[in-house]
Amino acid sequence: MSLAAKLPYDHAFAGGFSGIGSQPLPTDSDCLTYLAAVAAADGAGVEVGVATAVDTFFSRIKADGLFEAIKASCILCGARTLTGALVPMVGTAPTNLPVANGFVAGDYSRTAGLKGDGTSYLDSGRANDADPQDDNHNAIYLTQAYSNGSTFEIGASVSAGRNMINVAANVFTRCRDATEINTGISSGSNGLVGFSRNSSAGYEVRAYGSEHSATAPSDGLASDNVFVFAGNNGGSPIGISSARLAFYSIGTSLDLAALDTAVDNLISDIGNAL
Image (cartoon, rainbow, N blue to C red; front, side):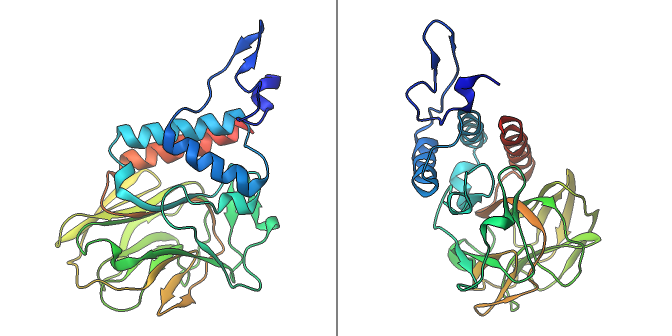
């Protein structure tokens, strides 16, 4: 890795040194706004390689038509600090809970993301009913699964219109319905797990590169905020997870395979940059 690549992306010589060579810098306007917010939270800009990895991600999800569907999201890796990692890529900043003893710096890895501890969770700030009943997605990227049937990696409500992802021995999901679907997809160590509904009759699941079509009619629209690392039962966390997550996304329906590829490349590129 060159010296210039180790510099903060916003350093005067980040693009390279005169007579020695140059390197690309981030250019996407939304990415630059996000990186500036992360830098303000961290106290310094991320390295050029991390910044360009994020820039490539922004460009890819825009080209694939995903960006407008993502309404609340955090890249939970890459930033220099936990505070920077909780800067939202899109939407509202999550709340680190419980207030007195939520996630701490030791739970965070720049390459692998945020590790659940069984007591801490994030309130995404995105209400489950902010997206239409039959137009919704939730997705997470795990870098370490926690195989326990009583936990939730993301979720909202225990009543009609509930959402949840539970990565146990297999991946279990609900999307705007009361039926817990066993997708039959075995849990893995690293990968995107998500669902997307664009029909009242059922929804699609993608987990660790495999697909499952769930026949589960939507039955309502719960109003609880979506929690990450837990489900939300009327404002109280349930099934708090000890998984490690590097990304989450909430919003309207989208192409899960395209999101999978984009996030997988993002996590890999950040790791290579560091």
